[in-house]
Image 1: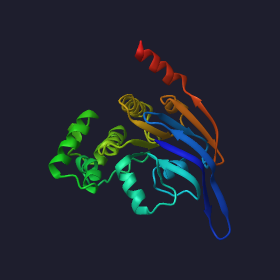
Image 2: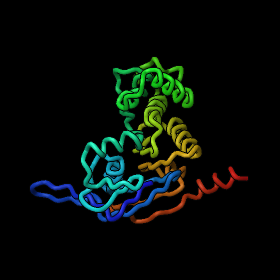
Image 3: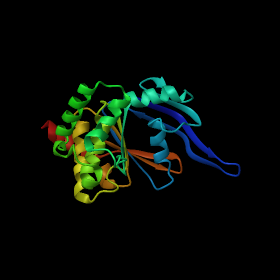
Length: 236
């Protein structure tokens, strides 16, 4: 699904050149749940932004569904992003002036989905995520956990092939954070491909694999025993 080879990202000013990523190679298959960890400045968010087609690489190759994304026009990236990727952010990124229903519906409007179908899809995803009773509310009337559920609903509304989560529990208490991680685990179990940036070892333990980054390179990749145990238990 995602194949990255020798990907680099360099930020340049008149005085300074900063190498944020240095010849990163990475492969994510359909149905994977992968966490990326590392200290601030390690390049993990830069990598996520490039995979999400919000930023461009300086060099190397990034293939999304076998299509090269490095060096293509913004119009091509925008189309690929809308059709294939759902985003979950630490700060929820909801629009305060819009109701929960309208926030979730927004990506469907951008994709020119007819009104009747939009209403049906919003109601279905809200019911699935347990927020049907909040559709007429506004973001500031919700708890942090509820706001993140709205953000997840918005991310899923177009049936994306991959979900990118950037510190999805970073602004939540432990109870709400755990609910969000259990929700991501359920999505993964139903077939979703998830790539998550996190500082939390606990959150990372929900994923199948953890990639550790530092100074713009991948230091290690490890399988997570917790996830393996869960998979084994579910099969018994």
